[in-house]
Length: 354
Image (cartoon, rainbow, N blue to C red):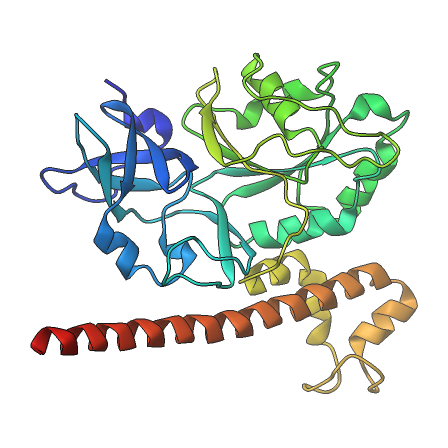
């Protein structure tokens, strides 16, 4: 029998009789692959579970711990979603496939992880601004971020890129590695501990699948070559989310490459990542300073003196603006969905009386 504690499970609540806990390790076409004490089983959502969900975030995803009504001769039923201790989300406007769950503001990418490996390559894909966006979404949602710069064997000197990341995010560890030569991989061992879960985040073609194969010490993921090194645009290798166990006992949640990273619910993450910027606000002469041309503006003074880099101020403003937009739109869409469900319930109740 499988010991679910090896998969990071903690008995956070009493399991009702007739149910068993499990962890979702893969999701495809409305069917989940779940590891339980009975091994790996297939399960679907109980009908009431789907009906009660208002937004996509209410539905289980890879990494979630759930309670299941086990069916030894067929597909089991997922009856409850257990509390999450960490979550990575991005703004998204697509639906889920269920009629009443329409476009909403949040798409959960991964849950219940201890570390976030933000992976980018040391070729033309390298963008500090993109790394900062990942960091903003990671902070405040549990899990410790780690920046991994891949393809170190393709550049003569990566010290400049490492320095740029260190300056932009001085509190985050940065590692340059090569999946081809094995350079730098041993430094990641401190994160690959039994029972720990790591989520891989990054764009297509940055080497996530190659890194996973290197850490697993076998080719468990298909690897496709980057189309051309001069444009650095890779192809999607991972097409769906899945959780994989490494020989060390650590688990990896591999995610499809994301070309867009929409910021959402990121006030805490922005404040943590740009604390130096927000500290300046308290030093302005006026409480309602807009940080433009007002006299006594600490932000403008810091920009003039070089204490605050224009790049950081620009990134802060961009992220705050985007987060505000997605929050306002998300509140509207959630209210509309709630109203639609209440009207549907009332309509059904009235029809039963007739």
